[in-house]
Amino acid sequence: MLFEIELEIIQNCLDKPEILKELMKHQLGCPPIRWGGIGLSNNKVLIEAIGFPGLNFKAFELKKKKIKSFSTQEIALAIIPTGLGCAIGGFAGDANIFANLMASEFDYLIINPNIVNGGAWQNIPSNALYTEGLALDLFTEGLIALRPKKRPDNKIGVIIDAGISPACLQRELQVIEAAKLIWGLNIIDIQITHSKLNLSINILPKGFSSGNIQNPETLLKAAQQLIDKGAEAIAIISDMSDLDLENDKNNDLYSAGKAPDPIGGLEAILSHLITASFLIPAAHAPTFNNLELSPEADKFDFRVSPEIASYSFLPSVLKGLSQAPSLIPIDLAETGDLSLANLKAFMAPADCWLGESFINLASNQNIQKYAIQNNICGMNLNPELMNFKNINKVNNYFELIGYLRACNLGFHINF
Image (cartoon, rainbow, N blue to C red; front, side):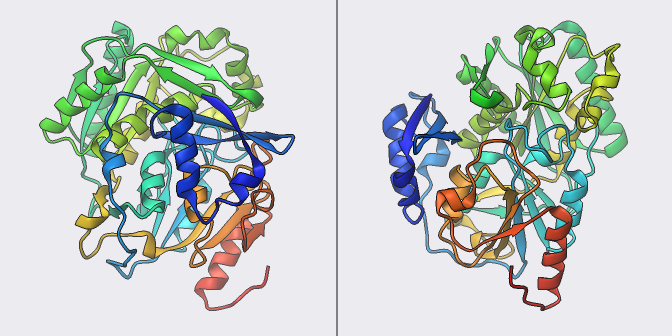
């Protein structure tokens, strides 16, 4: 659903994010599992919010407690939102190098999958906490803690959409076997949904991507079956061939590096559904009937090269989920778990500062916040406009790393 909210209302709600949540709930008739700003016109912010009336989500039953630390570890959070076409990290794992650089400055770096997923290609830092978007929202609100894995050994269950073609199914089954053979991943079982998920994409203003699932209960039933077998993380595979992306101008623009990934928003919705329902890590991998290299491959942007050079999009998802942290309700957190009290820094592109995690952190003065000026998506919702305070502007990620290193060495820099 798209609707508008006065900019002044949002600016006045930065220290009271619960008011914005109630506005979203009123518009949707239920709490949103994903929402964010799209743009600004006539001092009104266009908002997209996704909700599923009639479904009960475990995530919305969580209770807040006073923020406390369960660990001495220092962590940072880097977000590059999905489906917006951010100049860096908005394509196919094109922020992997910067994730490694940022992770080198902290005990742990929390990242959303969009930062490192690149089809079959991924170079995720060993101390990265691979955490999908709704879990980030819950963490930044103080509702959950993250429990890092001592080793990348999550028990992974794989959901496969019943709408997948036989050829795609055989390909992805071989990918799963390869992940077991080469990486030793603990993939415990697969579950084909009882019926098609019936997915659709929705291209929003400025090309930002969203989507819909007509049969969410089918997805959640398959997830429950895997969880009953011991799954600690869920990978989702669905066939995107029927969405006619090959003939979609938005897909052509994406391949040329000129528009957001048209399926990115839909992928986020699918993983959000799993996390909201079961409080476990989840991520989505699309599959396509035809992955042959186009004769016009020289027109592809280098940032999508990992996908162009991929046999499957599943490997990076499986690798990330293998080391994803457990999501622990804050009242069940134990010594060694990571809470909001451990968060020392937050980094994000310069012009998309409106979403659940952004609002949750707006008034937290214990966290250094960095806006990376050369990473933009065209949304034009910058921290100053949204009335965020004490934001450190850095020109690029290399400058950011310099400031982070200076802080770690005890030097205090005035921006």
